[in-house]
Length: 297
Image 1 (tube, helix red, strand yellow):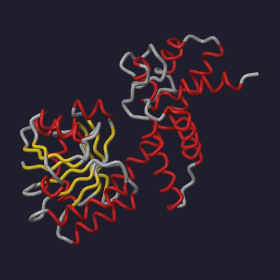
Image 2 (cartoon, rainbow, N blue to C red):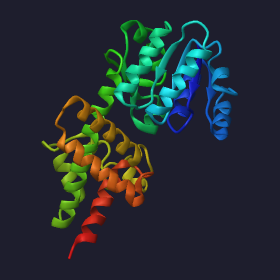
Image 3 (tube, helix red, strand yellow):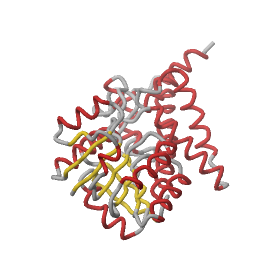
């Protein structure tokens, strides 16, 4: 299949590489020259522009930083494509923008899916991402083979915007639970409770959750967690703040009470302002530990 991939950043580049490994032809475009060079080294074609990338494409995948970038790019894509390729936006953006660009595409007779991901850079590299998809059943059927080349779990959540809705709800759970797990370990440290003992107990008890058992925020119990490599980002704290902010925006628009989500957003805002935005979001443990020491009499 001829695929255009716009946005070859930390997530997009390995996702495009998996499409290449699956045998697809991938024309990639990014504003960063080094990303284009790496895409070419992986066997893809480095396009000179968006129009060059999408020319002749059967599927166009976008992975961009924010809703404003998607809103600005989709009209350019629609103006440049020939026929009616499927558009798949895997950026994490606000629900309103996702629905707006899907309507724009539909007005041109082009199907569009909002398909944000969960799994971070590790999942993008391994091809084990979870795709939460919004769109029509027909569009989903067309996009499924492409998504399966990049992910392990692909779920049609509903109509346009439903993928983004699922993503921000999921990541609000994740952000809140990571803070809870981090706070528990900070308290355990103060009480003199061995971290491994707490992990062994909580991971088999009612405190069990993904933030504990798969992504434990303290060094030791889960060898593959970022805590064991200096919190090198699998999913940066700044990105968690972005997702929590999107959740709060949606909550305000929909009249939903999310007090813990709002508090989690404030904590990640403070963490980012403290210069931790590029580190993994599980650095909340280290941040809270330092915060206690700074405030202790």
